[in-house]
Amino acid sequence: MTEFGTGDTQRGVSRLLLPVPPEPPDIARLYEAHARQVWRTLIRLGVPQATVEDAVQDVFLTAHQKLAAFAGRSSESTWLVGIAVRVAANQRRLLQRREVVRLVSGELEDPGAAPDQQLEQQRNLRDLERVLSLLPAEQREVLVLIDLEQLTAPEVAEALEVKLNTVYSRLRLARAALSRALTPSAKEIA
Image 1 (cartoon, rainbow, N blue to C red):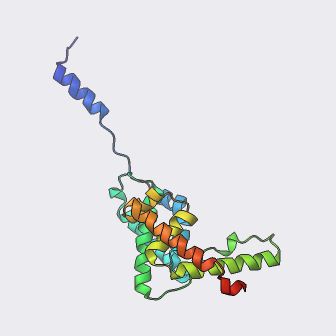
Image 2: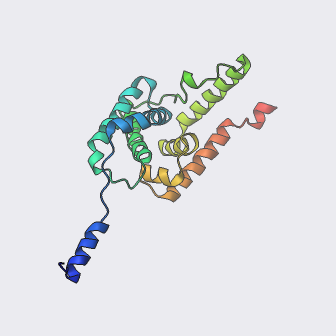
């Protein structure tokens, strides 16, 4: 029977305890799992309907190029949302014009709703879209990601690469602006 020296045993054990780096995710699986969320996020961040498919492609092309660098410190969803936020900002800069944000597609409408309910929903969405389009990009991004996409504030901070307190501040300002814009004033009531 061969005896190992203490140093050999410790080195063998330490090699066994080293964490195995995770394999980078497969881009096809990423696309299948997250394309709808990326599409919704881009639309809500102001990417025009006419260019959203190109923007989605840009997000996944960027993700494919950076796949080897993805270390898994954040969730795949958070990582992709961060890329989507930057792609949306680039799209807005390229277009150099403000457009009304389309929040939902026709597939989300309730076909069973009464016509008056559908009209009220359309009015509410139009008002919300108008207000969102008027918010500064930083506030709109945070509001959309937290209130509409249901990400947590720490996930948004990571995706936007900002401090957590910055996320909370932007969210507070965006919600206040949204509340002011959607609340009828005393003049309208009288």
